[in-house]
Length: 202
Image (cartoon, rainbow, N blue to C red; front, side, top):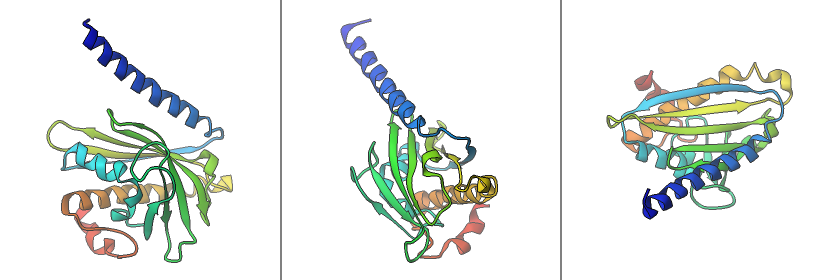
């Protein structure tokens, strides 16, 4: 191995170890029993474009989520990187919200770890709720975008009851992402246009 190859290899190793350390530290917060749900969708667009909209433009999730009225950056960087925070409002008054924070990013493999750090009028155990956003290049001009959501409700007995509701939200948010990526048309609860668009994505 040449000197230059050694430098590159060390750089990739350091990047991987950094993400592992961030993830291990974040995983410590998930100390109680939780449920995991997964949503994924093949999108006819380059992986880099989907990653940019889904993760790098972190504070603008209201561009494609049918369930969010507004979203914006709160603290940290004004782009999708470790430490960036956003607040997503789920009703018009803003009283129901999720305050989220990026815990770790592996840009090379397009994986982001996101945590709910505060919830307003939502039955969420914020110490035991997090999500992994992933984008996989399918090698044919399409990609597969996915959400893996690990959560525990508060009170705990509601966890299983909320499973189907969260599954629906994740599935339809990926449909909204698909629509926004391909058309540029914003989809959110404030505009209220999802009901007329959804039939295209069943």
